[in-house]
Image (tube, rainbow, N blue to C red; front, side, top):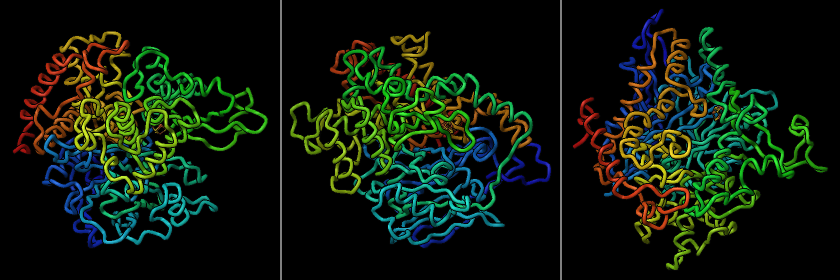
Length: 640
Ligand code: SF4
């Protein structure tokens, strides 16, 4: 939360935020201070501030008690700016590592309602160090003098439970659904995070307003980079953000117009249901869009044709399969309603009128979101819709980052298909039962290598040439063969470097031109992380002028698009400096050998342009450019 330091603030530096340093080992607040906003990175928040915090730590082991885990929000989180809901977890990641094995800084973000409640407690940045000697929950409450933080023993039944059970326990203890009182929201780890020693790809699951009100398994996720493992190593099973009073900046008239545009305008059309202001279907539409041109990840990122996954396209399941009823739902106050929730058709079949159908449906089956469905479906050779839901939903219950765990499984299946000594029980493409069993074995610590991620596995058993990651971060469901920008993503490959769809969607794309890619990486791609400062959602696609006007409206101070972009660029460059602080060199900005033209996965009918030579030119020029830029801004002071 940002608080005014003067009665009539006229500029961003008239605000301050509360930073709390909490030692989990002793259960005590070590330091709590109101810090004045020094610059626009401070004001916008999120990674703009948390990168500065982690820059002051030297971390060799991400699980060491002294390694920090930072929790915060953006300046628009919890305001009336539509989709302003995000909470951020920042740390040195167990997955994202240099070639020499040092952990690199990164973050993960979640929507849902946890962030807005956290903001309402008065928290600015919470820095967690230390580790508890027994399983605990961390409770952050709204106090008259600012946030109060305490540790409590984990409630009975939480240890070893799956995510839904953990949420149920906390919801019963801190909310009162019968009286419709919901002062609390939650961020929990699953069994995967509890077994952090062997599961580095654990996520943190956040509650939604729908979940606390109905009890349905509707969550949002801080998925990437193993933040759940880091919470788990501190022996914290869940965080409660408890605020009896919702604090919310309503803004002036401008915010109403902005929200109308965000919720119903062209910018979010791609993420809305067709019944919602002519939407294009949500993230799930990407599956069909990529499959028709032969670039849908299939059996570990190797599509050898087009239309390989028609039965599990969103459109097939939604429009042609009478077994399902689809209802679009959204996070608190969000009219985009990007969640495409699938329910079983009721007895007697689904009503042909969608308005009637959405009132009469059977059991909840799962949410069709592109990444989890694609990577646990076609990329594992799974083409049955029900099996696809089972595998995707299991990740949520066990507390896995759905991208990392399924890319890792694709690697294991690929490895086993090549006649090597089998790993993971010999699981093969299309083996749903085997994949489910393996996920459970990993989450509960019975399988001790695979949960450490694709990089660690390939270093242990071989197969680096088809281990689909850069810097240890598994690729999202967009072919690396079409995206030489992946190595320059600071966190998730598509959330922090927006070059992943250019090959398909940019009519001016020149795939064989190094100039084109260098320009996209160094001048545009990094701008995607503006949302990781200000607290709005990616799917709102808010352009910088809209963000600036939203900030101005909510806080009553001037702000500009140029300032949004400048703070974002600085955060990107600081993030790269933090990679180099850990020893990353240009050789760390790498991609697996088989994706290059002339190699097994590099000569696909749908994509075959990325030669090793082209990649190296793009990589070297981008690296040199960013290196000189971070020196220009003085961030080289972090590099030894
Ligand atoms: S766009 Fe989707 S994820 Fe983002 S706030 Fe709206 S409903 Fe939530």
